[in-house]
Image (cartoon, rainbow, N blue to C red; front, side, top):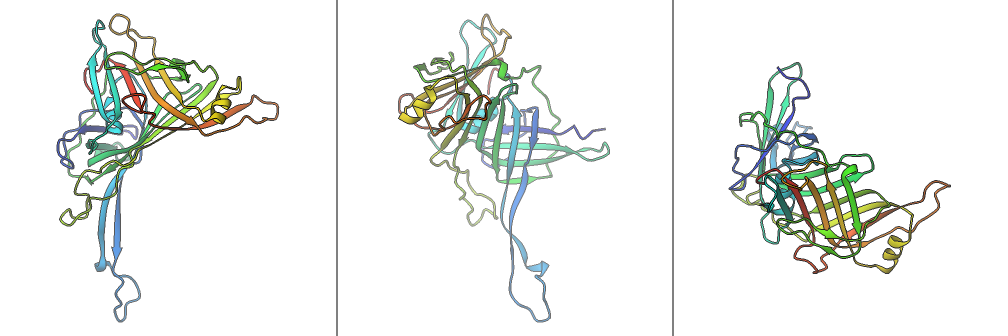
Length: 342
């Protein structure tokens, strides 16, 4: 018997694009919008005595699937999403920290990005069986991280899939044991200063602490192409999507306690941004579950402070992530976790 709460998401990396594999990772997700998104064509030829488009002349011309999966960031089980978003990831045991592993994710510099099989389980009303919908050839097109005062850190991922099947048997979920959530309480942010990038086994360090930030968001768009619909592929994408010129954007909200961000905006200064979340739990000898986002070069796009009717003055500051060629990658996301592999 089920309830309407018994929804699930499972996924696993494919070896061959579009060839389904058994799903193995099961996140505790917030919501999803995975759907079938076909393009229909309708014959318009005229026929004596007929005033309505005819059913026999309707056909599917193009078939795509996909949608969003929204997650709360936690200390276990999310490496598969980060690798899907950025394309590359490593997992390395942290020296002298038994049971602690560091995962580092950076944007791929080669095509194609990995593809995944995603299965969602949706229960029928009234305690009936869970129905399975399986999306083969799913590629993560984009993602957005967000954190704000008093909230849990969240990740929204957007997927483009080759097809959806209802014939694949439902895989009951198996969840990671006792993951902790990353929250605003665990966070600190540095904007500007000199930062040492993360290595395979050590988190990034340095930077100038910014004590006036109340909200943060960062989005990454792989700019995957919309081609590959070739003769012989039966209206579906016949190959993996390839990446284009990626786009990194973000925003911080800051209380106007100093002129540092104002002046950096006016001077169009290149700044490093380092966001770190670290829980209180100890793994290994001294390591703690951690999440880091390091952007070596950002440039601010506004705004100037303005009056706020007597309330605390804040700045809502957009930024663009650029490749300053100062580090090996323009984006790093690192996690310290007890997960032995991605």
